[in-house]
Image (cartoon, rainbow, N blue to C red; front, side, top):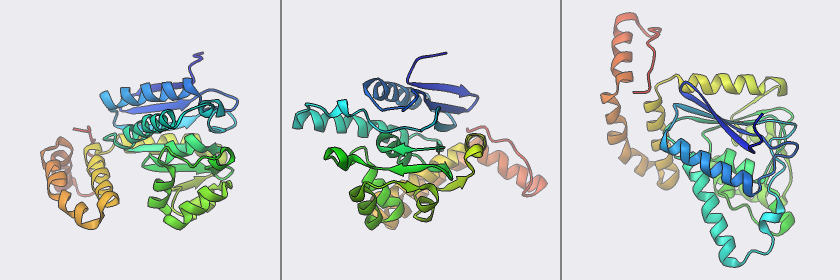
Length: 260
């Protein structure tokens, strides 16, 4: 068994990134280094879908506080620039990204989840951005991505209180997409990620680009990118084959998407 704190496996078009440093799955230098390396590998050779999950009794108990000890202002700024780039790399992958939380998910792991397209969770999972305990604010993109999903008031509440929130509450707030029984999370998350990876992934990337344009600068900007982004899909084999299949067999044509 590998002693790496994070592993990356590929199964056809689906990649699975696993946090694997029990019992606490803390984000320390080794974990951050592994995440950076795996994110770079995924960017260089994108899969058709990515699932991020964890082994053990917790997804992560947060960041090893030693990572903050003795840093200067300049070193702190450098740390956040580096970690934000990692989240942005995952966020900008041209494929659907699913984060599965089966248990406690704190700080860096939660912020990584917020950079994913879809967050699924077990009913027993709890989430928290608890950086106030060490005099910090979450700085891997958490507050702004909470605000994007749930609104600015909820972002302030979640961060400033430093409280833990259960999966069903965050589903109501539109932070978590789906909540399942704890025992089902891993299997159902894999099935969802596999379904997305087997789909028209060029179209999924177009969806990501349009939604990101809206998040960055509103409906007008999103509308402005649609002709180029969606127009390019007419050159894809997936669209051409699916249209032909639909015309020949109807909506249940079953044409296999190849991600091309």
